[in-house]
Figure 1 (cartoon, one colour):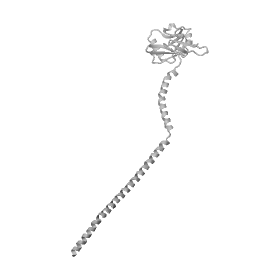
Figure 2 (figure 1 turned 120 degrees about the vertical axis):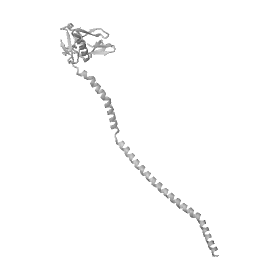
Figure 3 (figure 1 turned 60 degrees about the horizontal axis):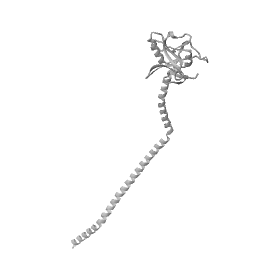
Figure 4 (figure 1 turned 180 degrees about the vertical axis):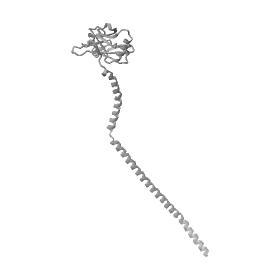
Length: 245
């Protein structure tokens, strides 16, 4: 009987335990779930806090960079850029201008070695002989047996009223009373041994005073040429011109 009673009690206790087991298991699961959920919630809060801090730091650094860029004067950088472009574009022009104008500004008038003349205002009449013309004349006269010179004469005619006539003549053709002889004021030692002389009579010199005798090489040929600043118009070939008297 005692054993039967003990077995009954044990069975009853086991039965009660079995009845309570689902609820105990459920509470344990719920507690474990709540712990996991709490851990996840805290971890999310830490992540959000860290992300917010990083974003704040990045925003502050970006704002500082923007303020620094804004404090840089735009007009200063623009002026610097324009000045640099201007200096680059201007430098070749200044150098070329200097190279172009050097021979013109330093060239001295030719020397009148025979019969120097003055104009109506008492100013000496003169011409210039370009280095190219002087070189070519020296080459021509050096290879000639006669003592030659270049005569430049102005006559009426041509399509513009006056025309240039140029010819090589021996020194015996020089009129000691009427002609004026010009020679370069500066002699180049590298030139041939001939003489670079230009001869004009008085009427021609009055129309050509201040002109430059040059030598040009073009597709149509090489020739001596007169650059007359007093001419108001010229023909295409350069031999005829008009002038205000």
